[in-house]
Length: 211
Image: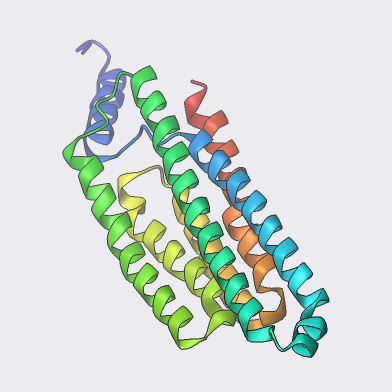
């Protein structure tokens, strides 16, 4: 610390405080990869729904409509689980590489606080979504995931870069639009988890990761 330059000293102190109170290793590539995975997954879901809708009358005529609905549900559940696993895996990988590059410790008290703040609303959101599925409220599942995810990001925003607040607000806004225009809920979901993640991740990458 240079005592002959008080402005420089203040900047160094601020940087040290920010490093100790925020998790700054979160990589923009994590957001980009999650967005790409979500877009691929939502495209495949749209493909499955399209095939089912085109054959619905055929299934009714054969008396196998309920059976094929059940098959479709299982396929969508497996798809959702795969999207979640892949997004988390690539997110952790790129964050680990970012922390290694910046010579940051990945497991700190701040990172555990971030995980708790982000994870707790997501757990309740996941349980809520499962209950919606079991009760047959399929049409609002997409909106509920957007809302709980946005709330989770907002709750965890105090531990990461401030730009994540805007992503949180956009996700929650899309949730409301998804309810208002329920027939386009899959498109809102794809835009929220896909396009917005890619935009956010790209901004974070060029603003922080490339320094």
